[in-house]
Length: 261
Ligand SMILES: [Zn+2]
Image 1: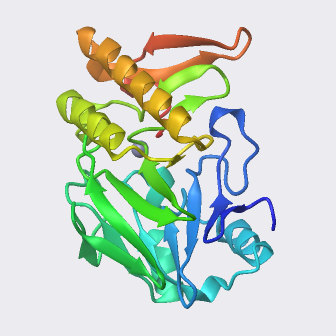
Image 2: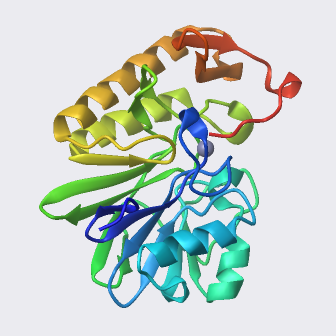
């Protein structure tokens, strides 16, 4: 057992400094999860770019064989989740799976949608389209150790320890965010009633009760966001480092260094 292991077949092998967490790979990375299907491995998202040394080291530390990664599954095409895709694909001769509707460059080998299953050795992932943060956003469900695990990407990040409740991915129509679809997707995830949420950033929600509460808070956040006329340019979450107090800040993206989440 090591710190990277979340479940028997799920590892956290990469993470950035989002939320003030200690990075496991490059600072701007999303959470990078590894699924151990026995004969083959898969990554769910893969980080911002060229951080493969640390990523490989973490996989080795988990006692796993980097070269067995044969599937690269993408929750959505944002650079902090996908920039290593093509390098990894080339090195590993792996297949890329993603949803349709990317506003950027990703062209996967296999487009997946609700109802599809992705087999990673002995593990089966159920695919769900959950648009809102982006049109191509996916959630992936796995049943393990009699628990329902849900990889939620940036659709539902949930309650995080710096007192931000119901965090969701950054809302921006420049990459196709859609408030109505976002709300429907969160409602859908809530209905799935996961025991564990493994988000694209931040810490997991580890009980069914915490997942339900976090999703309720995501709904509250989206309701608040939708009422503001300027919501297209809102960063839906941020926090004041001094007071550790949550703020809603209206910032025009063009005037600010891009921060993808
Ligand atoms: Zn994102």
